[in-house]
Length: 264
Image (cartoon, rainbow, N blue to C red; front, side, top):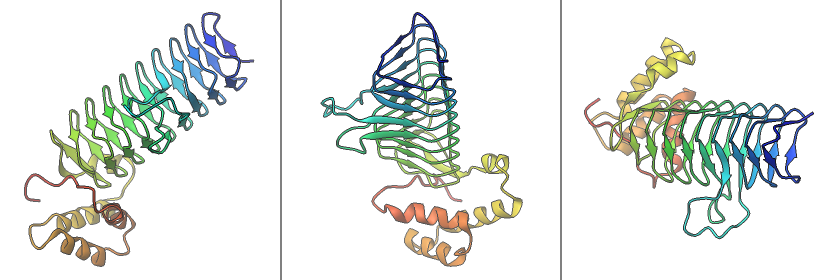
């Protein structure tokens, strides 16, 4: 049986699994869908057309499904879709998509979104993403699987952050971050590979050594960037991780990349 605190306000049209727990002073709107094991601890809000996946936890004052902060939004029916086992800490906000964008903001599985994180409209957030306190993610951003965003980092709208990348605390990211990369600063620049993250996730010494060799070739001083990219493609054609970096760069040549601030 669904456990709803008597002070909570839950619209009769909301779709709630029988195992859902809704704590004191929470608000759940008519368009909400809460899957098995979802818990709203207290003062949390789920509004708009918002689907919350299994075993997600919303801490006090988390607010999911709010209207996008976009001047062209006119109340169109857009959505938020959240996968399973995410934790949203205090004061996290996740906004719905826009009619002119994807019309949906999506979050994968097993994420940790710490205090005061903001995820803007039309974003795509992958699996096992960690956002430290007060991270701000602008509209239309893609944050891929296993990314760690340090506290107070800000990601500019339309930016892409590749898998296994790391953004240091306070980093202001206005350009795309390659998979496995580590960026720092305002504005952020590429410092190297996310070596600590790779080790923690079980990448072998040989895998990391190969990634480092490819990184040095890609960001060397000799030749043009396109020539070096072609060299990396030819040299490491059979290495999946490096081909992931190459594909990330090639898929949208119009997007600028975070580059090293000094010689590699």
